[in-house]
Image 1: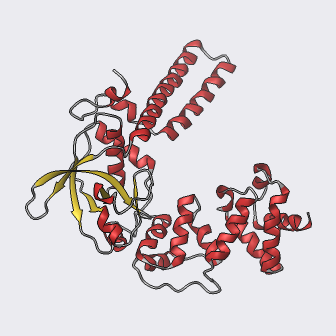
Image 2 (image 1 turned 90 degrees about the horizontal axis):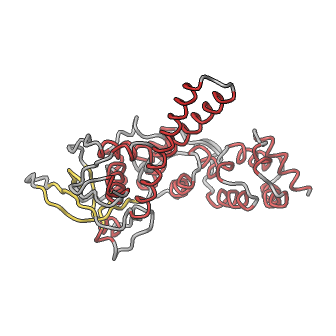
Image 3 (image 1 turned 120 degrees about the horizontal axis):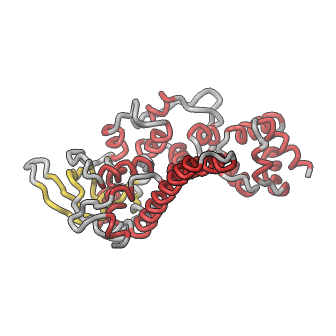
Length: 361
């Protein structure tokens, strides 16, 4: 029996749930830890039985990691290629009818967390998924007509012509992705249960309403969805940075020079006009210029998103001029920066010193 056949049986129920129970990142971390322990025991010449037992632990994690990686490989290759079955509920009559659609997402809905997806995969694979959970969808064509950007499960932008084949998942992104990953392994064919089709005029507002914004959303979630509830250019640009891997505070700092409070972000979520903090100024062109020049100097997002880079740059602007600071930033590429040099920058004054060095070079 091959990998696909071992994952699910012909009626759609998982035969071997343990192959998809773990999270690749966590398993790899555990493996590294247990391998270190094995190495420690071996070096200190511990009891042979103890070493053998630890070797069994390491071998077990390796085997599980291999199975999970194979599952990920197969699902990533096949996900989104074929239609899924949805059990759609008629809210007036309660009747259920199956529809075949592919999965899509509206751009700037809350990001999908892989660990949460893995958790649902485990529940579904072990027949523990609660089928009463509703999944809320909307026809992709309606969202595109309303001016929203819609992507398939792999992140490709959908055209109006393609949209007829897709349901956009508004609520239930993690569950739907879990079903899609299982289906992509070859033989999981049960319909996704309890699906409700909505006709939503304001998708951003609806996403806020159906989620507990006060506690379950973090600041990143709020800022991303705010780009749907407000037409303010700031939030459109911030959402783009967050999807690149920037942290929320730095993204706001780069574009405004200040931080936004939770109250201000919540107002944006509700589509209300916000008042910026004192001395804050929205300047996305300046922010993009800062980011692009940093990238040209081989400073990657994991470094740029550390606030002392933008704070150091702004500090240098205050001490000199905007023109001189950007000149120094542009010359950073001549320093041939490597990861070691960038890791040495631990506060904004360190970056100011680097800018001064670049200007003199």
